[in-house]
Amino acid sequence: MRAGSDDAWAQRFTLMIQPPKSEDDWDEYKTSLFGAREDEYTYKFNYPPQEKDLVIRTINRAIKELNRASCDFANAGIKVISTLETPPIWPQDPCSPSSSVKFYTFSQKGQEFPLTLPVTVAPLFGPLSCDTIYVRIHRKWKPLKEWLLSIALPHNYSPEVAMRRCWDRSGMVFPLMELPPELRNIIYEYALGPEVYPLSRLSRMTRNDSFTDDEARRGAEIVFGIGYSDLGMSRHYPYPHDIGCESRSKVAPPNLALLQVSRAVSCEALKAGWEGTRKCFIEPTMFTEVVGSRVGPASQFNCLSRIELNFTHSAWFGFFGVSVSPEIEMSEGRSCGPFLMDLKTLKELHMRFRSPNDGYSGCPWAGRSSGSYNNSVVDNACQRTIVDMIMTFAFPFVKQIPHVGVTGFVKTTAKMHWEHVLRQDYTGKEHGHDNDAALEAILKTPATLLPPPCDCPQSCVASNRDRYRSTGNYVHIDAYENFAFDDEYVASV
Ligand SMILES: [Zn+2]
Image (cartoon, rainbow, N blue to C red):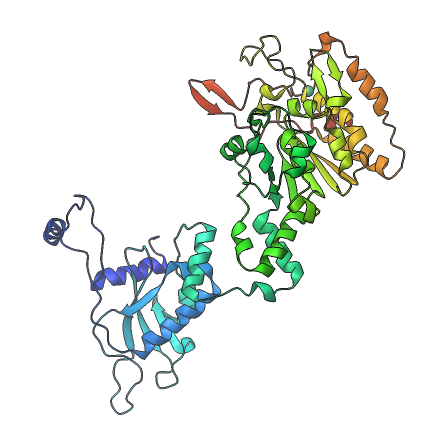
């Protein structure tokens, strides 16, 4: 507690009334406690016997009201008790008035030194209510509730635990079904999303098969998945090495408890969860498996109207059937582009690009000369050029999608250029981009210019194999990230 604060002042009162144990008492205390540590002593306030007191009952009512109004307050678990064995101050006997002030001690959960304050009722002969009780702090009388709300509330529960405890204490319930349907949908979308990383049950069954046929994809149900975390992903994805490693916060797993509330809530939540959230994919195989599903949620809901594809550069190349040897070759037969064209209900696609700091192991040319990843071989490409290449490969397959966002580690000019070209193309307007010519130029690039070198004002080439470079211990390359989004943007203005 901060010295000089109202709370510290009230704690001093407590210690004046019941000082901490003396050293002699402390020795006795230690021997009475089996296993107590030599240097440990916890102050404990001994409450006197309590008698019936209408003021305490009224203060408790005020605490209850505030518990309902504030989750933090409810979690502090504030309790009140008579500090001393003195008679109640209310009701007063008009013929022989007694003291108008009485000490009360307010404790809260986990707080070692409770707060003690003089309390009065004003007017003393008037009615007793939460609003006629005053506490004295720093020689001034303050309304009880005002003071209660000024108490410091130290606790460190997670938001879910805080909310649950608060509801237990305040006895509140949340009438979900009385909310308008639009608001309920927002709640469902946040409980299950807003980002969903769907999984196909197929992957678990055929983890080791290199071949997945259409029929198998069609018959496998999709599920809401487990959110996003490095560890979880490597367990559930068929090709974890294609995921790469992004420095980003975790996405909590969808809160499926909502589906067990009632039939009505479950039906609404399933629809909102599948249709109202963005479906995110971090490697191509899972995407093709989810797109291919024709049973379960995929047959009942419009699951894929908003999606994000967030692949490593290498996975993007593979997705569009592009290989490097080191020249660039494109095989239409191996392209997953047609999966995007089949998604007739797709309204919004985010194409996300990983940071060069996620390492050149995600680069299509990585390790080509050594046959395996090798820290001494830095075969990395210019981020600016490789994003242009991938967007060129993607163009024929994404131009029919109403909204395409180019996100992640993309130079601002490139983002503006590609989003503009795609929007113009979708609306049938002129954009000046000749994709066939751009693609031909890429496919004709001589091996000596591959991987594409970087001549950006600030280099956009990764110098580490992955985000965790080995220097005895794994060192996280913190990276949010010195990527120069605007180095050429400024120059071109
Ligand atoms: Zn560059």
